[in-house]
Length: 29
Image 1 (tube, helix red, strand yellow):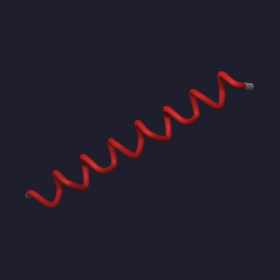
Image 2 (image 1 turned 45 degrees about the vertical axis):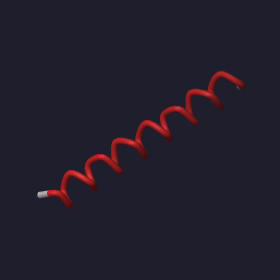
Image 3 (image 1 turned 180 degrees about the vertical axis):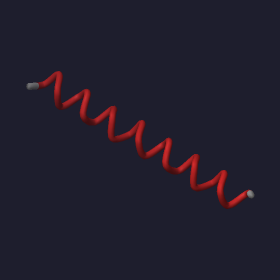
Image 4 (image 1 turned 135 degrees about the vertical axis):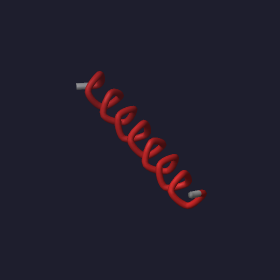
């Protein structure tokens, strides 16, 4: 159970990071 929670947390952090980068680059363009 703890492993699943860690994977979910990692996935959410990755998605947030990627979305943040896309937003920054999108604003620059």
